[in-house]
Structure formats: structure tokens, C-alpha cells
Length: 301
Image (cartoon, rainbow, N blue to C red; front, side, top):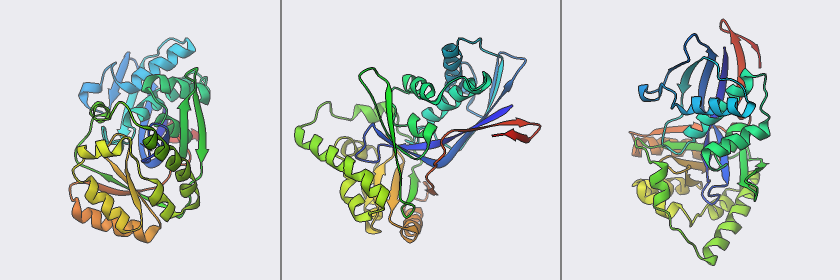
């Protein structure tokens, strides 16, 4: 048996639409072992305990890439990552399945190919990349549809708080509300702030972070799907922080200038949104991790 642990991701970071993503300390764990049945899955909704399960589909893709036969498999899922909340739940499943196929066949899939296969399944790299590498990643697909990745440091002084509403937003709906064109002024606004935001995150410059985390191409439209968006954003800004829609929503991610501001936001947000999950999160710097287990003991990492 072996375990795979994959961090949730928070994509876009406001101005980094479809190119920036951050791995955070919310995790899904997946246990894989041989079975006497073709497929057994537990730990998820019954509707996904079959060969349509995304983890299993990713495992199959890994086997196909390696040109290896699909083994009889038992998958047990223990997930902390909520579905349809903008925290990369589908990317988590894809990375887990592909990584499992690699481990099953002696770590046969390189990290580069793991990312390439994951992007083929997910369609874009902003969530799968930090799930693999950890930390803050900026990525895009080149003209040959190959992912290109850069990692950036984040100041330890900055603190992140996830505000997870008690309702989902489908990626399809979040995409549907976006405009199909933009003007040059909007593009220039976006590029300048996206570039400067990486510097603000690295240095911990909270004032610069507030001035750069001002998206114009997706948040004004997606915010309408989250009735509490303006109230939550104003709360974060009142504590000298900023806030963005994580992925396609509904989660809102606050970036606060220090621990005191993060705690204040946490207390006030819990009072304002009692049905939500309000949780401080750390930056996960490791990405996907695996360990082989025998009778409850870790043999190696």
C-alpha cells in the first residue's frame, strides 16, 4: 500500500488569471493497493465509486502513457478539499491518480511528464502546477502546448485566510459569465499589476499588494455569483489586507500583512459568515508527497 498526499490550490490570485496558482495547507490523501477485484473505491460519494472516478481516470492515463496494463486496484480517499469551491479539487484528483501510476511502475513518470499529462486532463496549468511543485507558481502553455513553469517566493510575514462559503460555484458557470473580449487598457492594467504582484508577495509589501491585486478581467463578473464578496473584501481591506476569488469560487482568499491582522479578520469573518468555513492556511512548499506503507508503518518517503 502507498499513500499520496496532494495540497489544495488557490488559483488566479486576482490579477493572475489562468496563470498563477498557490499550493495551500488543505490536503487530500489517497491510499492505493492491489485488489482481487478490478476496481474498488471508498471514501467518496457513491456516484464516483466506479471507473468514472477522476482519480482512477488519471491512473488509467498514467498506465496508458507508460504502456502498462491496468492492475486491479483499491483506492481509499480521505479529502479535506471541498468540491466546487475554487480550491483545485479536480487538479488534486488528477495529480493523485497520475502520481499513483508512476509509483506503481517504479516512479516511471518524470515530473515534467506528470505535469504535461495533468494539463492534458485539466485543460490549463494554473491549478495542477502548484499541486505538483508547491508554493507560488506561474505557468503557461507554449506554442507546442507544453507547460512552462516558474516559481516565486512568498514573504513569511504575509498570512493567508480561506473563507469557504457553504455553497458551490461550478467552473462552467464561472466561465460562462466572463466576457469574450477586452480592450487594450484593460490588458495593460492586468499585465502591469500581475507583474508587480509577484514582487509584492516576495517582499511582503502589503500596501503594494493592495494596489496590485485589482483584477478587471474576471472578478467583476464572478463577484456577482458570490453575494457576500464586497462585504468580505472590504473587511480584509479594513485590516490592511487584500482578498481575491480563489479559482472560479466560491472560496475567497485573504492575504493579510501579519498574524495580528489575520487573527482579526478570522474573528470578524466568523461572526459575519457563521455558516462558512473560515480557516487560516499555510503555504505548502512541497507539493505532492508519497509514502509507502506496510502494516501501518512508513517504509520510506
